[in-house]
Image (tube, rainbow over all chains, first blue to last red; front, side, top):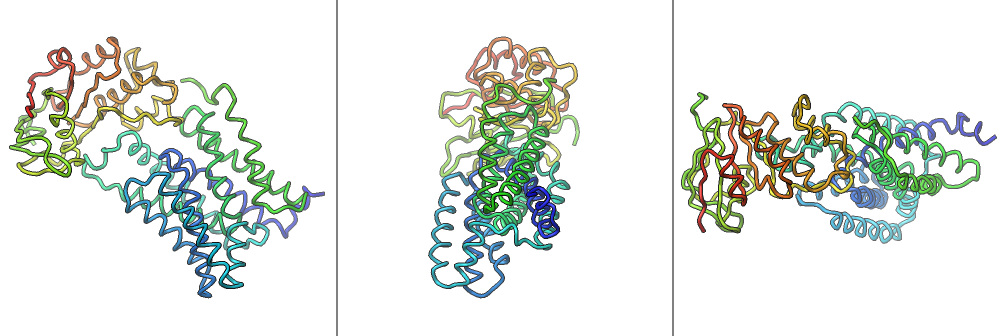
Amino acid sequence: MWLSLAWDPLFRVPLATGLTLAVALPLLGACLRMREQWFSGLGVAQLAAAGGVIGALLHAPVILFALLGAALGGAARTLTGSTRNEHYAVMLLGGWAAVLLLSAWGHEAGLAADHLLNGQLYFTSLPHLLGAVGLLAALLLCGHWLARRLLITRLFPSHFKANRQPDWPHELCLEALLVGGVVLGISTMGVMATFAMMFIPPWIAFRLARGWMRALLLCALLGAGAGLAGFIVALALDLPFGPALVGMLLLALPLRLLPFRFGRIA
Amino acid sequence: MTETTPLLELCEVRAGYAQPVVGPVSLRLSPGEVLGLKGVNGVGKTTLLKLITGEARLFGGRVHRPGEVTVAHHRQRPEKPPELPLTGREVFRIASVSTERLPAGVAELCRLCLDEMSGGQFQLLHAWACLMGPARLVLLDEPTNNLDQVAIELLLAELETLAPDRGVLMVSHDPAFLEATCDRIVPLCG
């Protein structure tokens, strides 16, 4: 019965949005993990939530201000140059405190804070789905170019500077994708579920996959599997989607203990 | 650019970070040449390489590198990513290095993920990627760190067959390796 409920027209858009983001966010997370910036997903997400709450306080569009908040985090990542997980922890703490303090100042802000922190996948609409599809399409279109440049930077840090080539195109591209992904994520599944989607699938895939493309494929499969399972469990047990999704992702964590890697030894 | 145009010229260069740590130094690297830099710890050998890559600051003198001369930089201690599912073959592909006819000691790295490699294996992979890539100017900073004799011999053999349009500027504390590979050695003094 609950399986048929998942395909009910009422839930088709939320399901499609959730599954699309469940593929896109782990791919973004893989880029962050490759740079050892996996914690930035949570830092930027909290700043985006703080931005959204400020928007609600000002009776302005929440999504626009969430984008501004996430972009502020992105700008801090770029402008400070040597961002580390400590910087993202500061973003997380600042964003979290701002959300809760500001949400106490008005009913609208309180609702926005609750929406952004906990997510409301079942209330997503067509714009959310189109945004998620756009994000995934952008990732697939520029993914090869972006990943190659990010990997070059990771392995040969002085490459672009030494060869008088700008590194801002790929840095800006990653930031734009991250900002878009985080805002779509928090406005549908909430802050923690967004972070979990960017953190757990890549963490498992990087341990299990032999080869970059296999790791990305595994990220997408784990994300989609957890997204679908979380959706069905949440519907069946009448639970909020975000925590159900995080629970499914946590259940997948023991996969890291498998004593082998997937992929042919060439 | 003619065949005799230098790949790199340093004229009375003083380089450092907050303040100068090396110089004045003058040198010229021609195509087909392997030039070594030697000196005691802290004399500024690595800083000189970082000046060429733009990571250190020029305090005086002149650096000239023709615009078409591309650079590969093997760092003194290239950081091995703790858990990155990238195989050696993929690293070579990213660095535009051919994986055909690799010597056995390097070919075996192709199938390993970076976190499965020892420090020495990763050092060899990184140095090989820089040396065998398309860059015309290769900067090698202590390439023999952590390498066993077999791996050192592999690098030696490749340096001996350097293409005539490429050049290598190398820093090493290994006098035997410098003597065996370099056409000239420039001592740096504090």
